[in-house]
Length: 289
Image 1 (tube, rainbow, N blue to C red):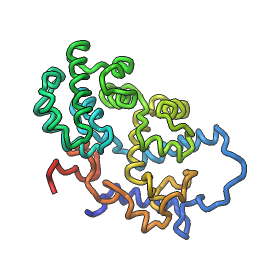
Image 2 (cartoon, one colour; image 1 turned 90 degrees about the vertical axis):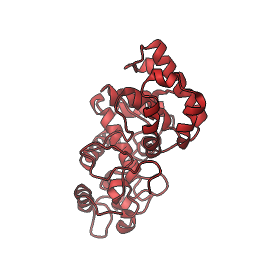
Image 3 (cartoon, rainbow, N blue to C red; image 1 turned 30 degrees about the horizontal axis):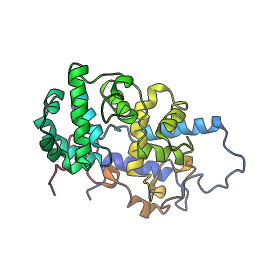
């Protein structure tokens, strides 16, 4: 574990300012009113959380390496049931072998499967990649379409994948409801839904459309770094005073800080080629120590 970067120290200071003398977050220890939160109050709190996340993660970005819409589409399909890190460690060899939809459509299935084997479920993913590549070649002139209704017709592409591609390759606002986003949206009482499309609809009603893509990145960043599924780092969370679920995880500040991941914990990130403003270290290539 390396030295905490300057921006990480700034985030830690922000967390410290939001705490009381006994180590808990300011406001978290107050007696909760029996009166339920109104919808308007929830919207105001949700938008404040988004502003706080924007300050915490000004460098939030998609954590898949890509250079064009086709690479982002393929990487997103591969990311199902695995980590972005594993995908990023796999795609350099994949795109060296098959840089275009035409190349991937003509791939020998067994050879394609072997390259993407590290991402898991490689046979099903290979079928999806071959199918979507053939569709791009035959139906879209070898180009990734920039419309949701076209993207979701491609093999292996659902609404979540389509929103990732639209938001990050075409600049079309979209909310990406992955496991992290859905978990935090429910913890923060933005929604009670489990179905991703219903979560998307509920959250879309809270925030301006212009915020949707970056909101998705910020929430996912926070879910991966602080607000974990099994043991959230409540005691090291700068937005704890705004969180209805405070206390579900570790509340001791020192113990909670040990739960922080990626750049907040001094560890490498998930991208081998992160954006220039990313304050952490790049991920190692596949097979590196």
